[in-house]
Structure formats: C-alpha cells, structure tokens
Length: 426
Image 1: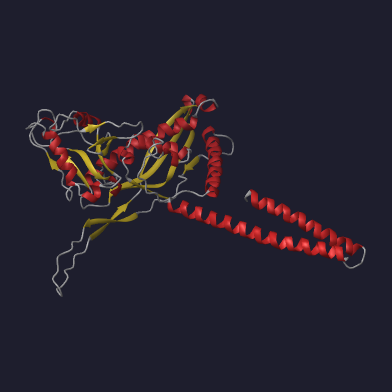
Image 2 (image 1 turned 180 degrees about the vertical axis):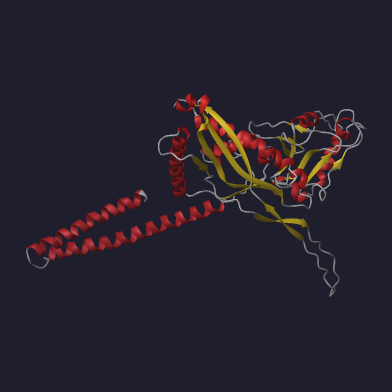
C-alpha cells in the first residue's frame, strides 16, 4: 500500500469518527439532528464519498501497476516479489534442515534431497559461474553452489547446453529434428510439391552417478568451518567429472549419448590434411593450413545456427594451446583473449570453452566441436540426494556422505547444428 493511500485512509477514518460523534450525541440525547449538526453531517458525508472515490482510484492504479509488473516478470522469466520472498524463506528453512542433517543432530533424517529452486524446466543459455555471465540472476543456495562446481568441470554446461530439470526420473521423450523441408519454385496453377521436415524422438533417461565423501568428525563439529561449502565443492566436482565425461563421449549404451556420438554420421566434420596435429599443427601440409581448416569448420555450420547466442567452440586444453598459435595470412593470431574478466575467450567472434573430455588432436579424433550447443539437451532428474552414515567408517571416526545425481543428455537437432573437426591420417 502506497503512502498516498495510507494518508487517504487515515483521513477517511478521521471523517468517519466525526460523523459517528454527531450521530452518537443525538442518539444519546434522544433527539433529531439540529440544523447545525445536519450541516456538519452532510459535509462530512460528502467528504467521505469523495475520499472513497479517490481511494478506489488509487487502489485501481496500484493493482494495474502490480499486474503489469507481474506480466513483465513472467515474460522475462523472473520471480515476483512475493515468490522471491517465499523462495528466500524456503531456502533459509532448507539450509537449517540441511545443517541439522550434516551434523547428525537428534531427529535429523539419514538422507536429504537438495532440489533446485528454479522452475522444473529451465532453458539455460548462460552459465552461473560469474556475475557477468548470469550469476546475479541465480539465488545463492546449497543446490546452486553445488551446481556451480559441477558446471566448472563441464565445459558443455558452461557453453550453453539446454538444461531440463524434472521432479522425477521416468523416461522423457523429446522430439528431434532429422531433416528440414524444402520449398520449390512452382509455376502458376502448377502442383505444389510436398516436402515435410523429418522428426524423430529421443528418450532422455536418468542415469545415476554417485560419489562417496568422508569427513572427519572434528570438521563437522567445528562451527567455524563452512561445511556446506566444502561438501558442495567436493560433490559438485566429483559428479561433474563423472557425468561430464559421458556428456561428451558417452555412447548411449547404459549412459548418456554424448555430444560427439550424436553429432557423428549425419553431421560430418572436417578432415585435416596430412601433418602434425591432425592438420592444425605448425608443420601442417601448407602454410596457414590450420587457420583454413578452422574457417572451413566455422562455415560448415549454417548461418541460423552460427547466429545463435549459444553457438560456441568446445576443445580441451592441449587443443587450445595449438589453436592459440595459429595465425592468419597477415600474421595475426586468430584467437582473441577476452578483454573483460569473467567472459569467455573468442575464436572468429564466437566464445571458446574448455572441456577436459573432448579428445586430443589425433588421427581420426573428433577434437574440435563447433555449433549451436543449445541443441544439446541435458536432463537432470530431481535434485541431489545426500545420504549420511556414521557407521561405515566408524573405526576411523569419519562421517560418510553419499551424493547421488541422475541425468542424461542427447543432441536433438541432427540437421547440422553441431559439427566437429576430425584429425587427419599422418
């Protein structure tokens, strides 16, 4: 309620008390209103009517403003002030329960499910590692801290893959595009040829990944130690390493279908000429050949995908070292380091991310990935389940925590959204 409405309301209460005093005085004395009292009564009632109209108009304006803000919040995917307040309250309560669980206090459960505060389906094109890349948009909670550490070791999650959060882990079927329709020039009154896009289905499962963390009881009992931060870091990195590998090179057999497996076959990469480094190294077949291969790979992805905000390069550290040495025909390095802290480096105007699980440059290896990485869907089933055991390492006075997470991944656009470089034979 605004200050103006409060002021009008206080004035209305004062006027009403004046009217009530006139009526009570006449009633007590068992008489009709005198001419002077009648004039005062009429004046006060006129002011009441005017105040009621002003208050109603002010409340209507406030409600319209509130409704408009709510619509804009919904449009931009932001929570309303009430939702943020409720979310902060739930987060605080959840942290109290989590701390009680970690310390093994009386009455605390033997397991704890940490779930995301965001909507269950989230299309993420920015990472939450830095404030410049969207960190300010993500509320701080144990789940968010754990996910941040998981993202740190998974380049594909940093690069803008689409993340789907679901409450449960039943198979989730996602339509995938395997071919686009085409339009043909048709003569007047001629028959229009049918050309439909081709679709299929990809099923996202919920493969389980686990990590066992053992913590000294002294660390738990010491209230000055950030135990939740420690466990979030340890579990996030361990789970990120486990699932991150499969999101890149998984073959889809009882594990996620990785990006490289999904982009093979229908999305052929570029094969380099004979030479050190699969055609990218300093002794490649001809001068500047490495740069030419990167240009070929860049333009093998069609323009709509290249224009996407999620279009990026994905390589490992050793490949990045090779790329940083490549020069164009004018002797300028093609690689451009970021000028702003917290933003990714760029190659040919597109961000380049490091993922340790992309293969090294070698004969037949898919060592460089480029394309619209938002077309790779990562499914996270539920939250992170923590289980505690005081008995598993009783002899060493260690408390054991088991962290479990379920997820899957698949490329949903097989028309050429993502391409890769293939190292040449030597």
